[in-house]
Image (cartoon, rainbow, N blue to C red; front, side, top):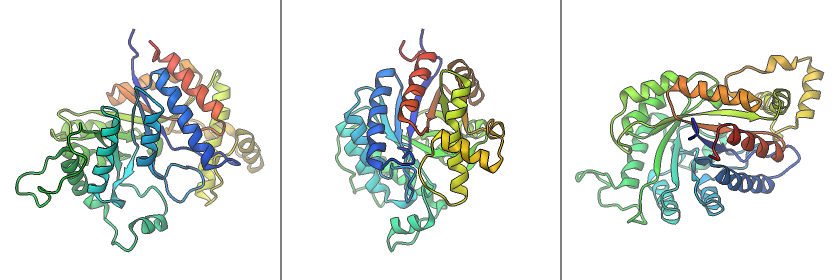
Length: 337
């Protein structure tokens, strides 16, 4: 029996408090190889700058490394923050990746800064910032170079993105609101709604994307939703593990960036602050529970969005807990079948 949903992963390469980036990258490679064997469909690498909590600042580098330790799973960016970069350079990076790993590369792009204002200024180094209002122009040029789609009278018509003679990576627009849905629809790209960031129901944004879709990078609309997932043998254990991200978010709001705390550290800090643990759960960014509960919620989520694919974002302090979450989810969703 085929699985009811296709499942993928967005990996931010989280750095547990007391660990380091090298260990985070080793965990990424370990998890990618595991998820390849378990039957997950995609493995996307995120882009974050100037943070102690996530090591993944260069998805275009990590993609090649992850693809080299896997065999079947699609590997891509979730995503490249395009407003920092030249669309031409991004097109060439992903043409190289597609040439090395044909038929397995996704190019997901976003318009968020992916870091602080200072990090954004450092990335553009002496150049004026590209306003987000021009994101759609950047995306159109990216698609033009990736797919050699420029019309004859276009100023870039004779500039080639190399290497040539390769298939095209899938192009996706990432977003957490309606504006990006319009951009993705106009470009004819895929659309990924980041509920794990927005914390709101994006079903209307996905429906808006479908209604406005025009054939472009894709011939028909293709959407999915990305949501946080923590799955454990019991609901109680899953809720305990998820305390790490609750405390991490609270600290980030206060300007404290020490990496991902342990559940034990979170329990102590919430107790000292007089914050009831039950008040932390139920927000829309994550699905947390035992395997049957997570399965029901993911199926309901996909039905609400009208999608057949869900991207999962699992952040825990302990690598073993992340591995186990992916294993339990794959088993309950029938991915091995």
